Length: 246
Ligand code: NAI
Image (tube, rainbow, N blue to C red; front, side, top):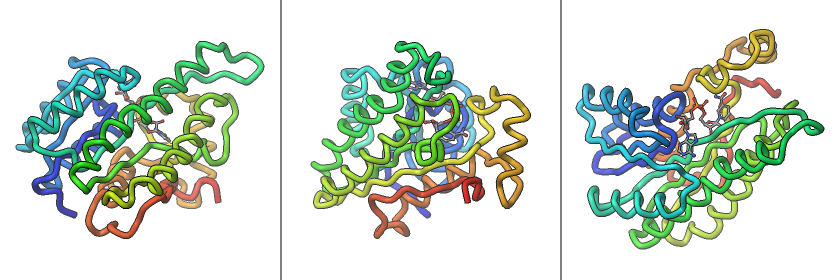
């Protein structure tokens, strides 16, 4: 895998899977563009990228803000010359059982996890279509495929992301753009660390390999799907979940 000369945008890159993904693409030679809701939160990943001598840019962008997303994408194109890969990783949870979930919690998760992916995917696709090449990668989840107690909103978005991925793969293939999704299982990041320990133990136990995932496991999947080696793969959802749902 080699991303020399390629520009890779990672949303929600301040921590967790996004941060590991930014570092992985940097390690493989890419120019890395990290974005998150606050510039301060990006200082750690930017520091690590600099230490690893990776060419990197940081943007404070909320993915729900269409204008800001479009401006970022145009700035990246102007400053780096191209947008070759986008990893639509930014995502949130706001859990609650169906009978208790507030409308606000439903809307918030839809806004970030679904509309945010639409905003970034659309802005990137317009540039990639002009270039005649590009790779769009979207963060789904095992929860999108199988559902999860207390996650009506989140599961809806992660299934929705699969619908967008397959639709974009059909629409954009002619323009040299591949589109895939990754469906992580339970990965130890700040998002998951806030879950009760007994639930995490249960998840670990359900996996045939008796493990929870690491952010790097997902970063590796994104890097593979973005690489030349995956040149014949489009419209797919790659489960990276330690077999938790077998
Ligand atoms: P995390 O909570 O550790 O990190 C998410 C990052 O996204 C944070 O830095 C946050 O500031 C950023 N973000 C949130 N809202 C944003 C917005 N509106 N605009 C820009 N950035 C925003 O999450 P984690 O665990 O690293 O997950 C990353 C992605 O992978 C998410 O889409 C999540 O749904 C998905 N995923 C994670 C799994 C896990 O087990 N950790 C399992 C399946 C999917």
